Image (tube, rainbow, N blue to C red; front, top):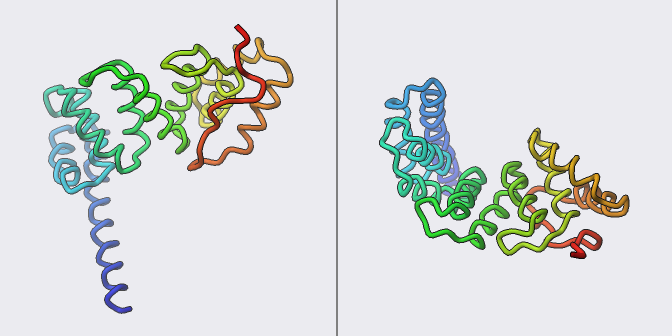
Length: 204
C-alpha cells in the first residue's frame, strides 16, 4: 500500500511541476513572448502534456515563435486530441473539414467536432449545429438538433450560436422548440449527443 501511495504522490508531483512549466509558457505566450513560450512548452509537449501540445500546435498554426507550419500544427494538435483535449479536437475537426494540411475528409471532421462538442466545447457545438441545419458533411437536416447544439453553445457565451438559434427558432414549431429545449436540459457534458430528433427532420 505504501508503495502505491508513494507512486501516486510522485505522479502528482510530476504533474504539478509540469503544470507549473505550462503556466509559465502560457503566460509568456499571452504576453507575446513567443521565444520564451516555445522554450517552456516544447519539452512538455514532447513529454506528452496535452495542454502543451495544443499550445505548441497553435504556435505552428499561427506562426508565432516558429515558422508557420500547418503539418506540424496538425501533428501536435492530433497528439493532444487523442488524449481528449477538446480544444485540439475542435482544431483537428476544422483542419479535416477545410483540408488544411490533410486530405479533406468531412466525415472525420464530424467525428472530431462531435468528440469536442460532447465535452461541452461551444465552437464545436456551433459547427456541428451548422452541419445539422444546412445538411452538410453527410449530416441529416435536423432543426431540433441544430437548435439544441446552439442552445448549449449559447449558454457558454457563443454569440454566433445565439444569433443562429434566434433565426432558426422563427422557422420552427412550438413542439420542435420544446423538444430542443428538453434535449438541452437533459444533456450532460461527457455524454453522447443525440444524432436525430423526433420532430426536427426536414420534410423537403
